[in-house]
Image (tube, rainbow, N blue to C red; front, side, top):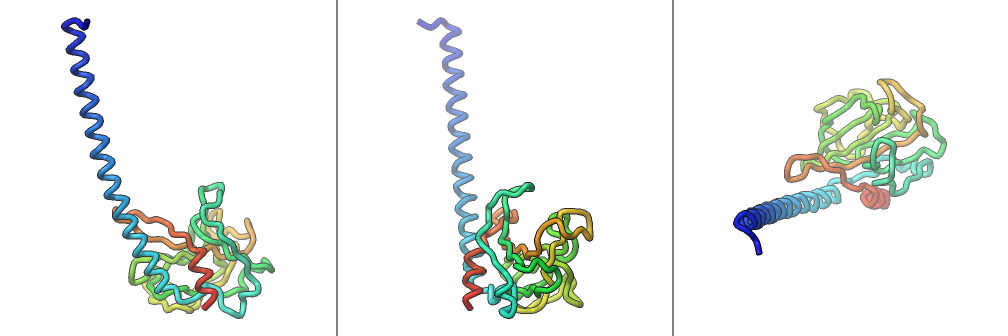
Amino acid sequence: MLGKHGWIWTFAALMLEAVILNGLQQLNLRLSGENSRNRAVFQAGEQYIAEEMKCFPIPIAYRDRISYEDTYGAYRDNGSHEGCDLMDRENAPGEIPVISAADGVVTNVGWLYLGGWRVGITSAHGVYYYYAHLDSYAAGLAAGKEIKAGELLGFMGNSGEGEEGTKGRFATHLHFGLYMRDGEGNEKSIPPYSYLLEAERE
């Protein structure tokens, strides 16, 4: 039998367990709601991309020079891969034009430590189209400029993974990424491979 103090400790333990369980239930409900909102955001985003992405990011005349596969989520030293790499078979930086896959506005242009010379274009629906490792930019490209699908952004290169101007640490390619903001305003990547396949067919 439990003594006086034994009953007190048992009652306290039961109360603590009830509080913890209630807290977990509330947390699960909140997370479930957030996940539902995020799923809705990304489902809408996927529909937007399907409608907006009018062009493959490499002109038809250069398609035979490139190869790509689904590398989204692949291991990288700096984390999982958040895009798809379009490789230049001839590994010649500065030769293959990179064009905009969709209409939008230039949100970011300039150097990133990992991405090198990059361009970020945001569509009317808030989809962020990311083009990285460029060798050079098209004349007049600047933040705030309105861009049409098919418009020249620059040329494929091998810039990045270092301080500004670093080139040649990997093969010539275009890193193409897609991003949307979730219900909490956090930027999340979207696998681009299927959209590239579809755009290449058109």
